[in-house]
Length: 288
Image (tube, rainbow, N blue to C red; front, side, top):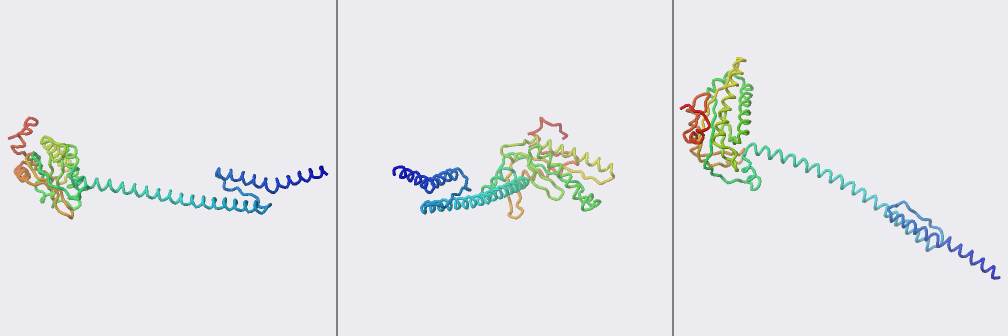
């Protein structure tokens, strides 16, 4: 009798292990794997009703987690693309800003450009010692009549580009061009990047370039420009005028005198005022 009871107990234990313990252990093992990131785990749903319901709930939880992971991955991909697009747009904006800044610096001195970007306007500035240089081509109309419009613009552009290179090298500020006239000034930058002597050096280099250009064109039997240069040093007021196509300009008697020095100068030479002469007399040889 005891032997039979013992056998029944063993069979009952095996049944319990199969129907209750084993499914619970399977759920436990699957839960551990899910916790490690494996969302492919599923457990059987046969057996005791409570265990079956637990298994179904577990499987649904895994399905929900899997769906959530898919959605999160999709959102991450969308966010990654959005960040990539945003970075690309920021790069484009940065490139365009650099272009805009470079264009602004082609029109304005650096300090004035920074002030304009920061405040939307600039204050006029007074400078005590600025060397103003005026350049004008001689007999421009007469020579221009011998050139086509394209040739005329091309030749002026070629010369003025060379002038631009020279003033940049000497730390001088190009102010403007009017027709065949070119105006620049040294001593406007803060900190100061050019002295009166730099302006004279630049003017001499420009005249040397124009003489070489004349020889080159005459060898090709082409008309060539000659020019006068005038320089005066003194106080000026500088600022921006206008709204549409605004322009950086300088005003004062210094500008007027520099213009007169040019108009009364000799072709192929640099005519400077007494004031400028006194500032640079130890650096150059002069003809009086």
